[in-house]
Image (tube, rainbow, N blue to C red; front, side, top):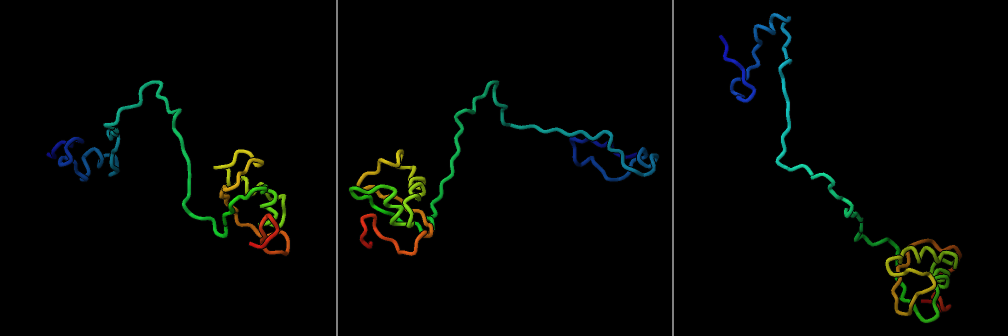
Length: 135
């Protein structure tokens, strides 16, 4: 006689066919297989609040070709865009790149160091300063 199989005792388990499985055409009978999962982690209480979860992504990689410009008295983002991109209408590119320090595109201050994102010039000239002289 074979030893009874106990799922809580791995040593009692056998892969040998039982008389019942042989009687069913030699196919194993898995009718009594049970499964369960237990965790040591407590479940969150009712009404758990995850409203303060925040996410952000930052990068330490520099943008290739980007440069910086120190604002001088009388500068505007349009003048800076004209000097770097050849078109004053590209001022928003500079504004968007500096949202961390600019809330209003009309309020830049002398001494501020602005990031100038890389972009091809839209005219045939090389970069000039917003004041007309070559850098």
